[in-house]
Image (tube, rainbow, N blue to C red; front, top):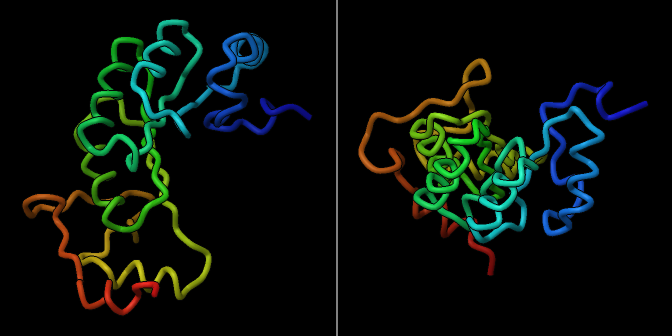
Length: 164
């Protein structure tokens, strides 16, 4: 059984992005798009992978690059016709940022949401910000119509869930 037979959207981090020889080998032997971004904290790394034609999907971490930096990485990828799938392992505030990034870049592909398995954790995420953005409808998230990130942070909930 091969990776290709499962028809994944992309192969995420199949090897270290710093091992160009291994990356060339994987890229040459697979038709599955290759995605990189975890642990990359320098836009120049994305640029080098793009120039080499070794990356099919850039996955800038919103926690590392923020909104502006993620948009800059997307701009680097655009002339190469490479899609962007911003990643984050943060909370609902970062999800609000991710939605705004998605709405503002022409080469956006898909957004991963780190939704926890435990209902208690999902309830906490719903309580921390309003409106609750992570529910989605039909697989889509909505961009808010209010200024900024379009959310209100519930500071009482932050205090309630603050780890001592």
